[in-house]
Amino acid sequence: MNRNVKKAESKQRRHRRIRGKVSGTAERPRLAVFRSNKGIFAQLIDDETGRTLAGTSWLGLKKSFKGNKSEQAAEVGKAIAEAAKKAGIETVVFDRGGYLYHGRVKALAEAAREGGLKF
Image (cartoon, rainbow, N blue to C red; front, side, top):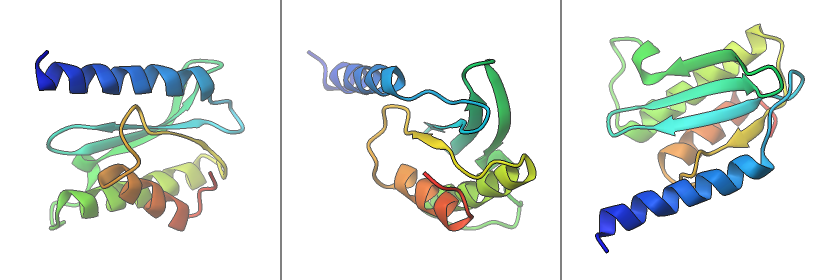
């Protein structure tokens, strides 16, 4: 079997397993992370109503921002924490989206915690 196919299947399997356990509510939404090759995205989702309460991505960073992808993810983490405060949200459930808690995903999570989110 092709290594890339195996890798994609493993990610999908992890994602399904996580989503079976993690669900967001209006009081405690799900912080969903999507990682692409170029950037990273984060959303606060209320799964009961199917609404996105807040969201941010690397595309929303200042044009003057310079740094590697982990630093970019940390900035997105700070931005999602700020957006959560504006929406009146303090606690969330972290959904790493099948990605390993490592590198950019970890940087985003730690920056969101520093920004005041509890999870």
